[in-house]
Amino acid sequence: MTYRDVASRQVLIWACTAVAARMPVAMTPLALVFLVRERPGGYTLGAALAAAYAIGEIIGAPVLGVRFDPARGRRHLAVGLAGGAVGFTGLGALAGAHPVVLGAFAFLSGAAPAAVAGGQRALLTSLVPERSVAQALSVESMLMSGVWAVSPVAVAGLALGVAPRVPLILGAVLMASSIAGHWLLPAGWAKGEPDGGVGRVKSRVLIRAWPVFVTGAAGLTLLGLAELTLPALLEQRGIGVGWSGPMLAGMATGAGIGAFLYGLRSWPGRLRTRSAVLMGGMSVFVVLAALIPGATGIAIALVLAGTLQAGALITRNLSLREALPPGALAAGYSVMYAAAGAGYAATGSLAGGLLQVVAPSTAVLAGVLVTLLLTGLGWWGEGRREAGHREAGNRDEVRRDNAGGGEVRRGEAGRDEAGRGGIRLGEAGRGEARREEARRDGGARSDGSSAAGDPDVDVAARAEGAPIAGGGDAEGRL
Image 1 (tube, rainbow, N blue to C red):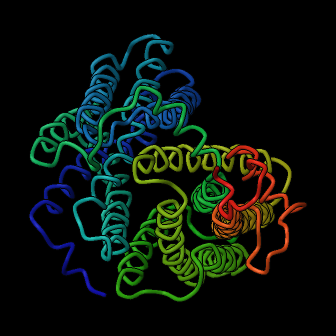
Image 2 (cartoon, rainbow, N blue to C red; image 1 turned 180 degrees about the vertical axis):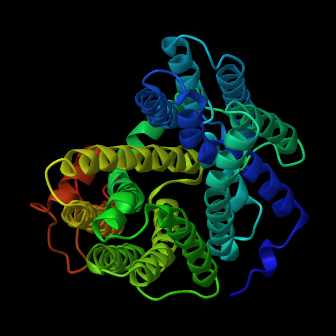
């Protein structure tokens, strides 16, 4: 397996469009903090704005994702990106506005383009042959790892070196340019007519895929745990907090390397088993990062954790392709995005609460335990879903066999009935022949004996009339 099928002009256009659409998403949390940090209670307000943005993403992704029309998805993507551009413009242009106004713009910035990532992923996989879907997802993961590695540096440089509002204005420009890029790509990622009840149908389908979403949320929960507790962990170990930036950049680099390696070949085992193994390995390295005292060991553990995290994310996306029909994939990717965002937000709350009462290393271990529980729940749920599919297939096979047996029995019954009907017709023919013979004999047998008492002869005699008395009439016709 190689990346040759992915190297095309359309995939290159898609890559530029996707980077322009998702760079603002990666920049926003830190950009919001820089935007208001000089106001009274700035850091608290920045955290509240970041929370409003995250809530918008969590709500917007599933609500908008289920309304995607696979045949004309470009229209939905353009509307979402336009809404995001308006939200970022409002934040940058009205930096001194009332916190409620900023919160509304932050919510719009998160909610409007929240389903875009899912639609773009579905579009990407439609641009490559089916055999190269894993490589396409690996390319996407590498691109996003680069985006998340560059965005914090870009935000800090622009906010401190130019103006705090510049990163958000840049985000609006990037989203607007992404709209134009989509007009160089296909209008959708599947053929078919829009269905008025598609939202209701997709909702039921998506609910049945809940184990994949749970495991996907577990993966980003662990990543968020490492990011949010790293500064406190370094301080606990007596290491400069400034090293947290390079270490997280190394983790993102490891994710890019892991995505590239994942796409080089096909890997053995079921997808759910492969995902559980990767999540378990990632958990081990995060635990090591929490327990190792030296900076070098922590950095290496985080790079390895990022490497496995990329593979786990790609495996989750492949599992989603197995669990959902093609028309629901964009909605499924959007719900996965929302689930991951919810997991990240839950991790932030958990870490913030635990750091008030326990050491940072203990908080990391507690977060890893939660991640493993979620992974186990997702693995169990996928196993039950697969078993249910097998049972349904067996029942269908039995119904087909029974239907075939019923046809055979009906055919045999028809043949039996036809045979019995033939026998009855044969008997009727023989009775008619006997009656005709009786009429020729005229009531007398060849040996001269009387035919009286023979029912067939009696019937024939009654039909022809009684013979005339006087004898000498051998035929009995006088």
